[in-house]
Amino acid sequence: MKKDYENINNLTKIMNDANDFMIDRIRHLNQLEESGIDPYPYKYKKVTHSCFIMMNFYNIPENKMLTVAGRVMLMRNMGNATFLNIRDQEGDIQIYLNKNTLGAEQYDLIRLFDIGDIIGFEGSVFKTKTGEITIKASSFTLLTKSIRPLPEKYHGIQDADLRQRHRSLDMIMNNDVRQRFINRAKAMSAIREFMNNLDFVEAETPILDTKYGGGEAKPFVTNVNAMDCEVFMNVSPELYLKRLMVGGIERVFTMGRSFRNEGIDRTHYPEFTLFECYMAYADYNDMMELMENLYEYVFLKVNGSTKIVYDDVEIDFKAPWRRASMCELVMQDTGLDVLNSDKEDILRAIAANKLLSAKIEEGMDIESMSKGEIIMELFDAYSASKLMQPIFVKDFPAESSPLCKLHRENTNLIERFEPYAFGVELGNAYSELNDPLRQRILLHEQASKLRAGLETASPMDEEFAVAIDTGLPPAGGLGIGIDRMMMFLTNSYSIKDVIAFPLMKR
Image (cartoon, rainbow, N blue to C red; front, side):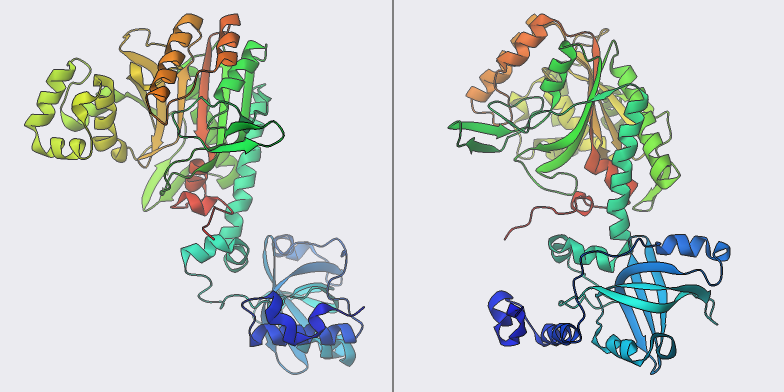
């Protein structure tokens, strides 16, 4: 069958960046086919991975035939012998090819191989004179012919935009990048294992809905043609999970994508993985214990230790974590006793301290803010960035959420916490509000803010309100940003580094 690429002159019509190196590779491809070799076979034998061979070298019989496969990363031709380094999912291993062993005809085909080709080898394992574990190949099979050169070995892809745009190449050239996403998958499996051990039920919630809620966020808007209606991409699964609890599922969790049409920075991204769970007959204290134990479990499972060094700071996620109220931290870092002061006293103290005033008032009208909103601004400005070790910041001002119970000892506060590490917020949790009348009042207040032009406010969700009317048991709820967990687990500085394929401008 004649192939379109047999006419190399037509290459530029289908590949905008075609160059001489690619043309040479396609010539090799054509020569291989002319020799009767299929450069893209359907399957290959079961292989043994490089890591197993390295770890079990002394237990493998000298003449035992092994099958390995991987991408060629290095090739050194020495006349009648050639050394290759191939890379599989678990690492690299050296291959030794000898003309006498393979025969002249097959050995001659090696000249048509290129860095980046995927090849399978059968052979026995031995150590070279320099002590390197090596496969002495008795045969080989070309599995995929690469027509695009890999980046230069020692420099790889340096530009962050290119690394994210061409993540496959980034993973090929950087073992740590590939391992990062393997560890991410292991961590998500560990989360499910931890929750299953506590008898939680995993549920799915809608991505598209005619309303949105569960978080203060600007949603993405789209349209369902078949229904001729505007819909929103979910900002949080919270309201649906609570409805499942009303339906009788006492322990429920989900782990999926959420979408918020807001800014992008080192720790924020418009599409992210959110873990949320709700436990009947529990409160926010139980959620603190669940979260610190979950983090400890995942870090031990994936990394073998709760300790990491992140940007030269050692952080230990071992339970238990420190607990501190938001007002306590603000007083510690600003000297203002915000809990026992009224709004006017706080404003006068801010005005009297020029440094404080300059930091808080830039671009903000604090005069129009409530006392609680000012406290949260003070916390964000002066306390959050100092929280290096894992900590639960608890007891938020009452106006910070419409879905949380009032604090049982101070009705100006709510039983809410946010965990922090290295100055980064890791999640959010409540003693969940289950008073149906108060819930309706707060939902209507949110809807009125939306009508007044506050884009991050939520519309009234009557179906959710009806469910709460029916009766939600006392419950604790917890949300964890999985991508931020992965930043610490894999020692990644930016959230884009732990997202395999972040959104890129065309």
